[in-house]
Length: 385
Image (tube, rainbow, N blue to C red):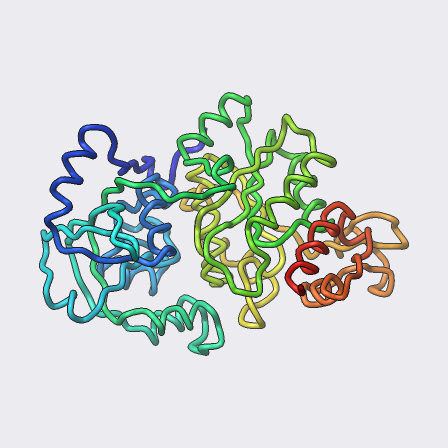
């Protein structure tokens, strides 16, 4: 099976008696309340999804990631995973201090042993990570609403997040690796999505499934834009599509508990590395992966993989062009396989699909399976009411 990124799967989840002892000590430390999106990152570090990270990054890693898309060790890493703090806390903590990490209600989730603290350069951070300083970009906006200071250090996790109805699909990397092995899958392709699956997605997944042993359908369920369809609704669409149109023994559905950064090319690298940690050998990269607005080129997220040697990332990107239904071919296709002009192509923008659904109209079945459309239609009807 493919090795985790950096060669070792990180495990910083504290259990049993050790957990009890840590919790007793943690109550006496200074406390830092974290919003839910930072608690997700805390858990993802602890479970090994963000291997080789063992904590929130320090200044050297911060600078190296921004400048070269590498940790200070030289390992490829494209998104800085930072723990922002107020100026007051920044001034009142020192290296080797242990800080208790809680939710906004004071419930203890973990600790961090400080090894570094630094002030962020938000303008450079935004420009390099997102290729813009425009605060209309959701990732840039997030940076500018966070504190200017950060602490770094190794973490420990005591309490897991509650994923409610999605809990049955919440699998840690060590669990997916066991499942892949049990299924006899030596090659596994991962598909990243934050949207309901339409026919173009299905085409990419099934084309990839012709090349490998298994498909890991891995929808993101962390923080997204307000306009994105909620994870609970999206999961229903994945369930119905898998039930009716996919071979059950060759597909695994499991959630990706990360937040969206909308960092386009850099996020494609980040998403690939996380799927490598899950145990996947291949990763689908389509049109405008992790994009938003017009900040990135259509296929920039594919081109960025060319900046690294294949062994540096370790997971194989499968690069697909924009797929559509061709009424002349009477099948799904891309520009690589279809000779016909765009007048015969059915491809709808997300904006147009949302407008149709909000008006009570079903998108063409050539674009989206009717079972999926009906779930979304009910969602938009309820939202309208």
